[in-house]
Each structure stands twice: as structure tokens, then as C-alpha cells.
View 1 (cartoon, rainbow, N blue to C red):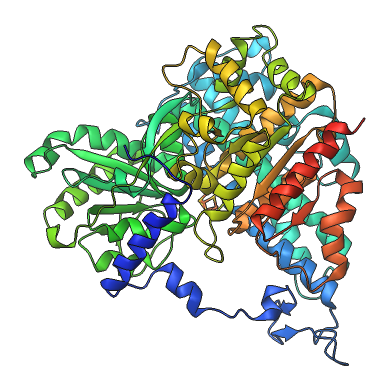
View 2: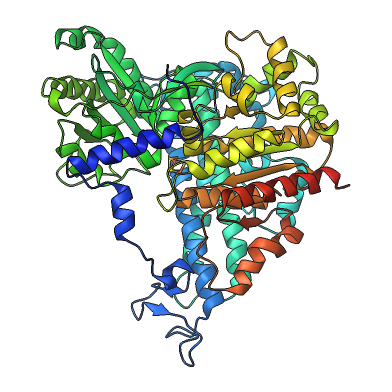
Length: 635
Ligand code: MSK
């Protein structure tokens, strides 16, 4: 296995970009360049396209300080921002609904290709959602009970907060959110309500609009916590696994199938299908069978549970095809570049869409349904086998770079680790490390890649700096992808980058651990929906330290924020009291009012706030400052 160096992940990408240009292939990096310079109206949030009288662009010129309808910069910026947030919340919540409907199908018996993999978690959740002793039932009935409770949270008509928000927040955060009325009562209904509010000629009060933005964040939180829990029930709670990441995980001697997107219902069953078709793969000439590799968050789901390698994160999805050995790229929903169609066509790679929500014209579509999951997965895998036979060996170019990854850190896995030191009070281990200043606090890297910055550089630079400063680092989504590819999820990275306090903390855990592997510098908690795991860990820490979350030395950072979903995640983190540092400009600077509210005033309202700092080293200093301030704070 190649060892990692500070920028080897990027050198690897540079090599592939050069290769793409040699082949005359245009990639996202080229398209980004072609799109610059950016329109400053859009960049700063003051371009309004809400009605057909626009676009209206706001300037300081007399007569142009308002749109045709009279909406000013504050209203327009707030409305544009909250539109992003609702889209993000819709993505995560619809994902959750699919998971819940699969669980319902298992309970009813109509879905046969999945099973309850974690009955203990199912029972626990059923109790959390109101199951009484007297109602204790068999597994299928419990699955139905949990699924129906979840579904009620999508549409119910009473004003009480969603059961899931209530069940997954600590009492202090819950009380605060109820006080300012930003807890959603029903996911679908609240999304429609906010979309209505954002209609032309409806809400013109930027503060009221931004409050709904916080509510959209809490909708996102509700959906994603539901998605994580139900996925764990169906496919198992993750525990530490050792695997690898980066383009070097692709194999010339195997049929390589990349699963890309977010829905584990599809990717997980493709893993089953690949096992079943091993013999067919050998017969087709792939001497080592089938190699499933992950991209983006569905890749993270497989990495966490199955130890499947991660070939790319969002920013490098196109480069995986340019290796010339990807036989099929199977996509579901979210973060899938439409450019994949042309790039796959330049090779033998079969691109297969699977969701009725995410098709591409002229691309093979195999509709995926949970009631015939394995059948679809077998068909898709056979398409990959057929594609392998058309592979052009002269186009193969696999960079040899890959890094070791230790992943699989669910909250359950972390508690098991801490319990080796404090059997009855595992969270005390983390709380003590903070109280006695062994570590400065916790930073969670959340979210995406963004082609506005050099691929992965903001994320990896900040992680190395913070580790040096004794900050315990968690990560999810494509930040996990970046850190994995750069070798920062290995135990070697602990030796190289951890400051003395963090090294002591990790070594103390490692000494007591019964894991077959060491511990990594950065703990991968999963896909973007698994930011709910981060929130759960923070909740348990707040309870252990008997402090509100807004007083704990915890912070989140999205150094390469891109997707509206990541914005929604940042928003709920702020709402529950956690500062969020982003290193990509947010489209809000066209309104001093909105910018001030997000970066300063929210602190007094909810405890969390956004900090926007494009320079990664300066952003690291901000994070360090936040943790210092919070550790000294007496609440
Ligand atoms: S895939 S939302 S680029 S994390 Fe979840 Fe990655 Fe961000 Fe998409």
C-alpha cells in the first residue's frame, strides 16, 4: 500500500486531470474554470428569480435597490438562502422516507431481500418512539410499529414536534428550540409551508424567513436521524473496519463496479449480487471476480458496514471513469454529475441510473424497487460483466495511490471503545479528556468538495492543523472521502500529525481496545445523513457533562461546502448550539442584515452561528479560538 504524504491525494488527481486532457475529456475542474469569473449578483445572493418579472438584481443605484415587486436585498438574500435550505432538507427527508418504506415492507412481508439486521436497535427505537412493555411484539410487528411512527412524522396534522426530533435531542436543546418555535411538526407539511412562505409576494420579513431556515434545518435533522437509525436496523450498526481509499483501489483483474449516490438500499444489495455472480465474473475472464467500490455517500455507507473501498468522493467522481477500468457506474440520487454520461461514453463504462427521480436521457435505466431489489441488482451486475468484455486495455490508467482507512465509528462503536476504560459510564472518558484538557474539544468535518478550491485541500489542511492542536476530529460525507484518500484515517497519521494530548487520548483508548486494528487520526462516522451520529455523540456528551450543547467545546466545519444538503446540515448544527465554520463564501453578503444575523446575532438566539473564512489556516485559528472560548466558558 502506498504511504500518504501531505498532498499525495492531490498529485494523484493532477495526474488524472492531465490524463483527461490528453484524451480530450473535459472534467469538472475545466468546467469550473470556464464558469469564472462568477456573476457577483448571484455570488452575493442579490439576484431574485422568484417570479417572471425578474431576474431582478439589486445595486445601490437609485431605483435598483429593490426588485420590481419592492423586495429589498435583505428579503431577497434571506429568501434565496432558505430556498437552498428547504431543498437540502427535502433531499435528506425523502431519502429517510425510502428507508422507512423499506422497513415497513420488511414488517409487512412485501420486501423479501432485506431483513432486520439489528433487532436490539429496533427494540430500542420502538421503545424510544413510545412502545410500552405491554406491547412487546415480534420483530416484524416491531418493524411496522417503528415505520408507522416514522411515517406519521412526515404528515401528521397536530402541532406537536416530530417524535424523532424529540427523541434525538437533549432536553436543554429541545426546550430552547421549542421556545423559538423552530421544531418541525411534520416533515412534508413543513416543507410545503416554507415553500409557500417563500412565494413571490408572501413573506417579506427577513428575520421571519430566516427562522423558517432554522426550521428547515431541523427538518433536515429529523430526516437524517431517521435515515441513519433505520439503515442501521436493516443493514447493521457499523463497527471498526479496515479498508482502503483512492483511485488505486480499482483493479485491472476484476470487474469494477462503482456505486455512487446516497441510497444504501441499492448499494448494499449490489454487494450481495456481486457475491452471487462471482462464478459468472470468473467465466467472463475477470480472474479475481468483482470489485465493488464506493463513491460519495453510498460509498461511505458500504465502507462503514462492509469495509468496501472508497474510490472517490464528490470531487473525483469523474476521474474514476478516466482510469478506463470502471465497467459500470451505478447511480441513485444526489451529487451525481450529469457530465458522467459523456465521460462514460468515452470509455466502455456502462452508466446505469436507478431512481425515477434521477434519470439522464440516453442512459441505461434499471428502475430499482425494494420489492425486487436483488433481481435489479443481479441485472445491473450482469450489465457490468458484459461491459467488462468490451474493456479497451489501451485506455487503462490506474494511479497506484491508495491509503489505508480505519472506518466504521458509529456512536455504538465509540461507546464500546470508551467502555473498555469506563465500563459503566463510557462517555465519561470523552468528558474527562475535555475537562482535564487532554484534548481541546471536538471538531466534526461535515460535507462536500467544491471545485472552487483545490480538491480536498481545505479539508486535509485543516484536519492536520487541528490534530496538531489536540482537537479530536470526526468526519462524515465527502470530507471523510478526502481525509481517507489523504491517509488521515490511518494509525500512521496519529504518529505523524497528532499533538501530544490527542496522541495520549488515542493511545490510551488503543491500549485498552480489543480491536484487531489500531485507531485512526480522524474517526469516520459515515455518510452525510450520518451527521445524526455526530449529533448523538454530542447529545450524550452534553448529558454526561450536564451542560447545554451551546457551552461545550464542540464545533463543526464544512471546509468545501457545496450541496444544499450540507447547508441544511450546517443550519441544524447552528440551531442546536454548535458554531459552524465554512471556508467557501455563502451567497449572503449582499445583505449586511442577513450576514450579521448568521455570523453574530444567532449566537444569542440559539448558541450556534456561522463563521465564514475562505483561508483554511485562518479557519483553523477560528476553530481553535471557538474551542478555547467554550472550554473556559462557565455555563
Ligand atoms: S455526497 S452532499 S458532496 S458530502 Fe453526500 Fe458528498 Fe456533500 Fe454530496
